[in-house]
Amino acid sequence: MADAVCFQTIAVLADRLKAGELSAVELMQAVIARTRAVDPMVKAFNTCDEADALAQARASDARRAAGQARGLLDGIPVGLKDVIAVRDQPLTASSRMLADFISPYDATVTQRLKAAGAVLWGRLNLDEFAMGSSTENSAFGPTRNPWDLTRVPGGSSGGSAAALAAGAVTATLGSDTGGSIRQPAALCGVVGLKPSYGLVSRYGLVAYASSLDQIGPFARTVEDAAILLGAIAGHDPLDSTSFRTDIPDYRAVAGAAPRPWRIGIPKEYFGEGLDSEVAEAVQRAIAFYQSVGCEIHEVSLPHTSYCLDTYYIIATAEASSNLARYDGIRYGHRSRQADDIVGLYEKSRAEGFGAEVKRRIILGTYVLSSGYYDAYYLRAQKVRTLIRQDFLQAYGQVDALLTPTSPVPAFKLGEKSDPLAMYLCDIYTIGANLAGLPAISVPCGFTRAGLPVGLQLIGRPFQEADLLAIARSYEQAHDWHRRYPTIR
Image (cartoon, rainbow, N blue to C red; front, side, top):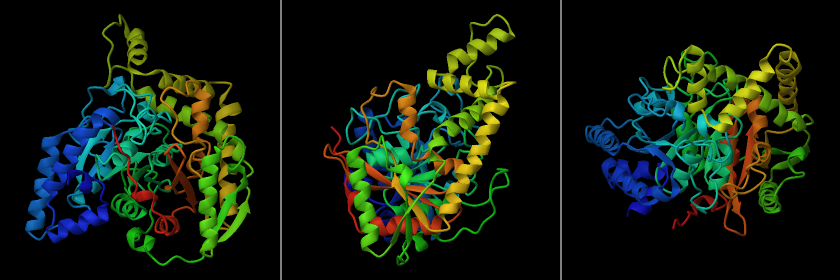
């Protein structure tokens, strides 16, 4: 019974809870049992508080019994990446720097999930401070892909994707700075959505690169992603970059009858470095859209070749600034080996940060330094504007762009020891972050080795409703999202 319940969608479970076929406590007990069974192998969770989750579930059942159920998410277990603040819960960013830190407040998305009645379940592993593409850069150790435990789940939100794929939670939230929701969603065979920059509040998110970071959902289906987005989206005065816009019923819109959408295929996304089996699966998805009457147009995003360089200048510069607050004094790891204040700074940061975080801080500090700011950071911001203009110009011809999510399927743990090889895993996802656009990864097949493949759809700014409808039209005609890994 536990396994069957754990792979059901939010939409199905909400109906069962409403009909009285299942209680929130029974659902949570099944999720706890599943987590106990699979997480010793997958290692998606940093921490779990079973007693607290069961207390939340009992409160949900009490509301329902009193006729006060709060909607579709009431009683549904939702896991959070360990960079999203939950009051009185650990907030580690998978780093030794914050290993003992307990959050004193809730993130805005946490408050909104609580208001919707969701049961918050577990703190999910990630690449340290969300810097990575494989969830190997974690002070808690690597997370493994449920489809093949010798392979990575992607990153940086690998724990969020792997826990969902393994059936250890019904839905999760992650953060996406350069593909950290979409890439692990593709590698783990689930749906991952990065909203438009400013649609979902970043208040309570541990900052990596503030002009790029965005919180978004992982789910089994596009419909479930729409339900979650509807719960967490909306203006927040606590986030100065939060955008005022109407929030539609994303679930209703995503389920609307499809129209003949105009789909753009960026020629720059189908070149060197793209795995042949990934390319075949994505080409079949393109053929599907064409078969149902969509217009398919080849488009060009001419500044795509500059995306990787631009991203790693801007992201590391902002990381250098954001992570300066971890100094061993105010909070976080404090070295016991220092003899003076300078030594305290140096040793606390040297002991608290891992190798990849240090690499990005050093690079970011360099590009912001006197004499190099104009040559690197300022120039990167100008190129970023050109990249965004490429996308906006393409949207004069099409409603959305279709690309692979990741150039390769899940790779072996330890396979990409060269940082540049790892950075190239984000080559198809970083453009949407630089341009502030919504993008979604949807399962579109498997390799001959049984590894999931994802297609990416990139939409117009704040047009998540259209993006979800386009994605759902593909999902409903295929059964990729109904396949689950056997973990052993």
